[in-house]
Length: 164
Image 1 (cartoon, rainbow, N blue to C red):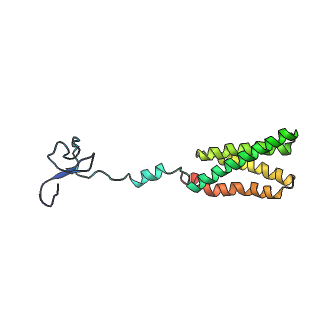
Image 2 (image 1 turned 180 degrees about the vertical axis):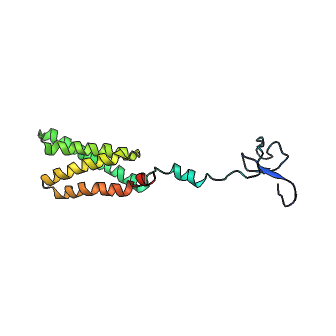
Image 3 (image 1 turned 90 degrees about the vertical axis):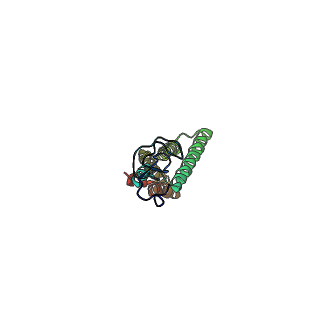
């Protein structure tokens, strides 16, 4: 219905499909929905605040990819260290503890993937202890990885904190 061809006629909009109707209509001509009196068309999109609130705690694709790679890498480290420990019979702290810390990091990253902020703290504790162990065992390359891993993770997941 066009108000230009019927000047002066009052109109309203169907709240179900948005069809313009004469004010006297009881039902929509297009979808058959009973008319609710209103002169404003129904919103076509959700208000911006609602959309932002729904996206407030979503991780970016890059952050998700990084977290998944870290989960896989730490799981592989854990499995290989546990296999090394059982094959060699070496149950020293420098073999078993890094394996347990890698498993702890898997848990922390999994928590981050579920958008739980506490996962970041778990990752930081595991990385901090691993950093100390790597420095003690003079594994400087692994120590650098242990130090930068939480930093990179923070840069990718800080959006969880910024959108509160």
